[in-house]
Length: 64
Image (cartoon, rainbow, N blue to C red; front, side):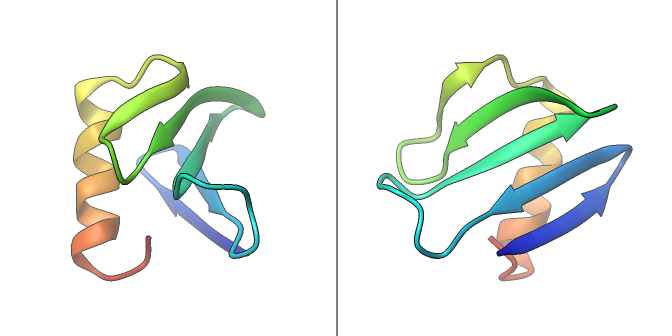
């Protein structure tokens, strides 16, 4: 499991989770978005521009 805190959000991934490769994004203990990293689209919830920027940052650092 990878758990990263950025910009007031918590980003969680599980290595053995079901495909497609995705990240769960939480704020204040509530799911904001479940984001499909392969197809660049929301699987559940809505991703704000800020959340997408943070996801891109984490991906560029090789964390997601």
